[in-house]
Length: 115
Length: 115
Image (cartoon, rainbow over all chains, first blue to last red; front, side, top):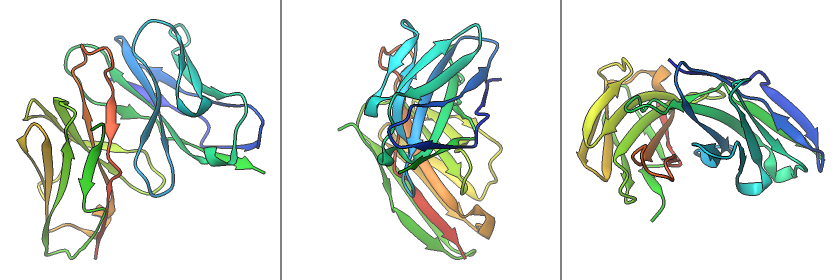
């Protein structure tokens, strides 16, 4: 069964500084990977996803992530953060084989932007 | 239409009440999901419907009863809930994995409070 680890529960960053949110996964088969953002009292919004192809994936709001199969990682990056990026960020994985529609989430990283 | 719509947005119910949560999507997605999210925790999968058939039940108590009347609608019937069932209930949908733009779309959730 797949699993996701987000080691950093909280990440404080100064405004306009770069940020990296770490995500590692575990699975015995190929996977699809996702990053979601959740603003307070709201649902989940897809930032970006990796299905296949280029390992560098660009998403919305200036975020990007790189899939590294050898390190089983899918870290999220942004070169310059804004106050509006303050939110909870979830990495998620689903196995790409037929069936097994279980999207599994990491425990989340709370990104706080310091003015 | 690229949204998953959940109603109601907020629900307060007593432990002896019967209520239902509704979820609707018109994107032609063939799988629909119910997730439960407690405060400061990641979403946890409850049920998966694939082509209108229940395919995954994550050992959810019988006081939660899902129903998929057609390919666009997903309901969650609630009966005799406990205060610890208070949470944000998220609905999601997804296309077939063979689709190039495969992914999960989440609704904004129903905030449930059991008193």
